[in-house]
Image (cartoon, rainbow, N blue to C red; front, side, top):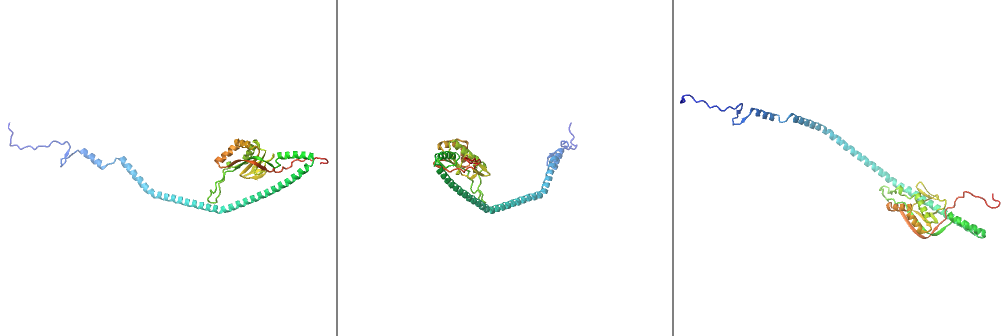
Length: 320
């Protein structure tokens, strides 16, 4: 059947958009997608990030508030340190000046004491020389009287033997000389007073060291021994009082010269193999202490100090 051409044409409708709208440029956006994009643009950070940002701002504000106080505390600490260093420098300077002023007076006092000691030692030596001269005169007169008779000569022979045993007679013969001394101090280690550093106490030569040296020489066959010129007898003691070494109650000082008359080879060997010989050798190597052993073809040792009489018994007729 033919269509009626007299009826007007129906407009053509576009296809349904199902809730979508068409942009004027032809771009189509979903209503739901647009809402999500708008929410994303309006609220770019979630609450956790926003809270962290707020905390950071609060901390930054607190730090800006504390910065002036911190700077003040830091300046205060720096000022205190500077003041402390200045005070310490002043104290060191005052101590240095005091030490520098006292050094000459201490040196002068030490020199005066040293001079007095030297004078007294010279005086004692002079008295000893006079005593030896008088003793020699007495012995000569005694010997002259005793040799006038046979009985006197026999008595003189016994007397000489006793004097030799008690170190009351001069002895001459070959032997050895052992010299020991304290370690040398470090010179001029004090820039103020120029003082020297004393050696360690345990490296100084003591009375026991000298006793062991003497005993080693006796063991090696020594017949007579003297320490710094002081002859050793049967009752002679080597001891220490304070910092001084005494031989028969007379002070001796380093270096200590030990002279022994006897078989030199045997005495050297015995001393070198003894405990004190090895220890003094170690002191010489480690602490620079003095130790030397020399032989001599002729040593002369003077008599020891005369002993004090303890008991006396009268003899002969009419003795009381």
